[in-house]
Image 1 (cartoon, helix red, strand yellow):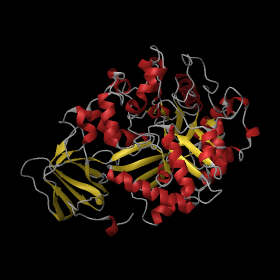
Image 2 (cartoon, one colour; image 1 turned 180 degrees about the vertical axis):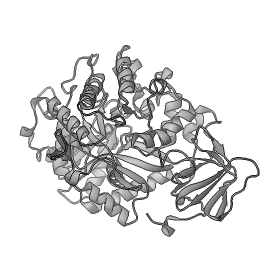
Image 3 (cartoon, one colour; image 1 turned 90 degrees about the vertical axis):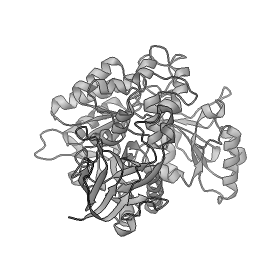
Image 4 (cartoon, helix red, strand yellow; image 1 turned 60 degrees about the horizontal axis):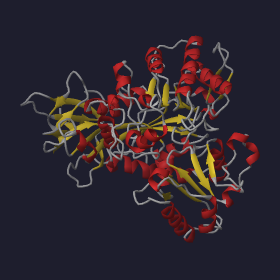
Length: 554
């Protein structure tokens, strides 16, 4: 048999523990049909390409990112770039954008981080000065706080907010422009919804970048409503992206918990919440599918809005609590579980993690399900007791390896000696048999998988400080997290995550072998080409010249 594509003379890291390496791979109809492992074993194809000894790994899979948000940010004000080292740079960029934006239209930016700006943050007064005729909304890198000017603030109905969530004020009582959690989310009611066409284009932009980094699958962590949703019709935008050939990376969508509603079905036996027509986790196909329902408990650790048992060393922040009504959260988790949903619940603080585990345990007691794979997104500060419960309940944590480098310095400054050992665990999960996915929370961090893998292995902050080195994992374990682990987290390990016969031919060609180079060089490994279903979506030098997306659009 002659296959569609044969990749020869390759250093293939299959990810399959039984057959970890191969030197050639054959693809037919989008799937792997043969691997050559023994010397002298040959494969023949319609298209044959010599990899020149390059390393090939399974396609990277980001288990938690915000694709639409990221794609939109690429044409909005970029404040996450290395050049943004002071608030003055932020003000200059806002002023420049104001000069080219019609009066009254929104100026939206994202990605600024106080630590990179000497501890300073933009203020309402200065934003008023540089953009007096535009509403301005600047979203912090955490995604849980933002700064607005007076024009934007005037559009908000502050009566909707509880006292603890009111916008920040200075010592004289004047608004600073700082919005956190519920107040931050309130801006979305004015700045969104984006049109379906805008989100469709954003998905296309994001996917183009993903392919250049070796990403072949993503999980969109919240659509439709809530803190991270961009439109009530986001699923329609993804479907439109597919129809227009812009959906170039396999995508799992997490509907926000707010869009589920009670379904009183005669055969359910217990109250359940779901989408209309009973759609739930798993609906869709290999390119676009519905994943877990996304819910939020607390905020972010560095934003001082995470729910911590011991609070913060300098005192408990007013917003350091479970953000939503706990009874609503508990009911929504239980009813979604009873409707067959997988749950993915944001919890950063140790108190929030315990609350989520309590809810999972209660839901499983009401309606047992052996393979639920309920998830805790971020799972940032996990105590030893929480680790044991996660393992016992079969829960999947979804931490972000890149956070070690990106915010590790801030954690070292902020948290106590008793809290720090519990932060951003990795090896502790694996040691207990807990599946570890790989993810970025992009655009809250650099989404390049090789950068995330670098931080998972080296466990150093961006300043070079050691950060919980006892949680370091091996290169092989980090790659497995970003491939098989992420596939497992969304019930796709049967078709994704390793290069095995019968699985989808999603793979990445690298310029070096991550398993043999010095760990300090991992972030420098470059992606030469990326293929999804055996079709090259990224091959900038036309080195492989195999089947192209234009020949086989999804």
